[in-house]
Amino acid sequence: MPDSQNQSPPDGEDDRPDHSLDSPTPTVGTTTDASEHHPTSPAAPLITTPATTTTTTPATTTTSSSTNPNTTSPSSPDNPDTLPSTSPPFPMRVYPFGPTAATPSGQPQIRAKRRQVKNACTNCQKACKKCDDARPCLRCVKYGIGEECVDSQRKERRKGVKRGPYKKRDGKSSHPDDASPPLDGAAVPAGAPHSGIGLPPAAAAVPVPYMPHVGYPPAAFYGQYPPSSKPGDPPPPAYYHPSYYMPMPLPPPAADDPQGPIGYPMPHFYPPPYVPYGSYAPYMMHHGPPPRTEGVGAPVGAHYMPYSAAPPPPSYARPPMLQPLVHQNPGHQSVTPTGVVGSPSGVSVNGAAHMNPGGEAGAGSSASALVGAEGHV
DNA sequence: ATACTCGGACAATCAAATCA
DNA sequence: GATTTGATTGTCCGAGTATA
Ligand SMILES: [Zn+2]
Ligand SMILES: [Zn+2]
Image (cartoon, rainbow, N blue to C red; front, side, top):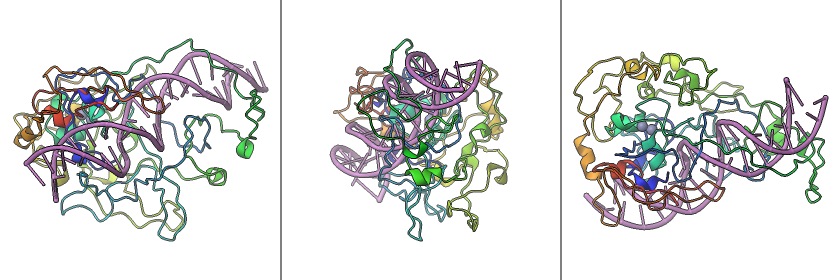
């Protein structure tokens, strides 16, 4: 859905990848549909390892873009990620797959592939902010709307849609017009559908060590309920709330590590998964720790049981600071507690549509800001 | 300075098409 | 049946704007 309907939390910060906590968007009353701006889709994907595909489909061709997340230090004004003074010496915006920009040495770096959660929570979705696999996600926790943190629903992909002939695998296209020869053998290693990182062929050929997400523990690490739960998926391991991963100094890059200085110790290097409320890292508490009313000191994992077994999410009182976030802005539509005002619709360029232009309005009070207030169009 | 909005790039998924 | 293609759908980056 477009963000618009619900409000998104202030993301001011939210956006930052990884550590940053994104601000959750509380959707108040939101219906969550899954889509944000774009309408959306279903599914739960598997984590594919990164492969190197050279760009393939026209649509998805990755041209790398200019912006390099890693390098940019998080400092946009709104970027909360920029943690308070306590922030670590390295940029918060660390992409799971490593940076892309130029290395200090001046060598072009490969842009790190952006990691996406399989299913963002409704709040983050609406706010178009980064979510995580935990539930409540960091952003929601940060904004005190953990109770509203639920997976968004994805719609099912359409079936039966005919597609034109594919280009021949041997490199010859079935289409007269696409004469372009396959790049480097053009063949994408089987099993590596799309994981290409828009690299030049040459670069793509170079096996880049897969960094499972520096900032986050491996996907499997989060033991939350299967977002996309597929029948065959094994139950996730115990969950460690990411928020608990305090930033730590990066270890010196391995001499042979092309990735450069990015690298956190793997999750297991971090302290135990126990995040009593009030123990949040400063950056998590953008607005101060949510008043905890219950479950103090409860092991984090408790909240992250497999879905089926999980008890209802704990309720967090909305932090006082958040109140102001409520959209009072006249311009905004906003928000009825239930919700949405606009209609979903936008389509992004590539097809993805931002959800509703009208925006979600949603939230009752606070939410607007917390959740993306509007859908992108 | 911080919070919020939102366009659009990028990522992931998966059914159709093709190959073996 | 296995593999690949490529459209669809979802995530969220990051710049721009608004507000405090
Ligand atoms: Zn979230
Ligand atoms: Zn959430």
